[in-house]
Structure formats: C-alpha cells, structure tokens
Length: 77
Image 1 (cartoon, rainbow, N blue to C red):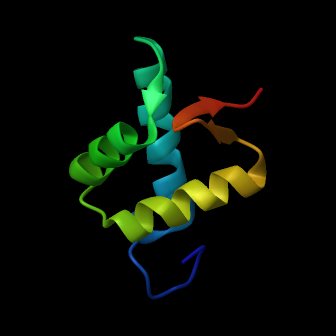
Image 2 (cartoon, helix red, strand yellow):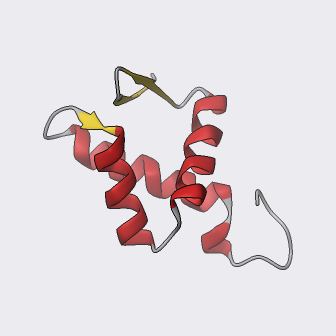
C-alpha cells in the first residue's frame, strides 16, 4: 500500500522504502551490499515479509533512488 486510511503506517511503501534506504546507507559504509543480505536484514529488523520488502525495492527503483547490478544494491545520486 502506498497510503490509505486503514493501513498501519509501518506497512506503507513510504515507510518500508525509508527503512530500506536507512539499512542500505548503513551497510554501504562497510562495503558492497548483496540483495539477499539487505533483504534479510530489513525483513528481520522491520518484521515485514519478503513480498513487502520487494514492493519497497520496486518503489525505490521506480523513483530512481537505487539500482541493482550483478546482485549488488547501490544508491543513485
């Protein structure tokens, strides 16, 4: 869900996308970030499903906020 009145804020794409970006920024400080590793970290810490994670990733990709090449996730400038 992007935004509706009957959904918890933690289940919106805005929130999930923000969590993904926060985890990605932290992880990039120590080197490259593999998609599987990022997925596991975000799903565990935010208590979301992998489907919710990938909807958030799709959202961020469509916004031009991140890119995935050879299984590595990078932030776009």
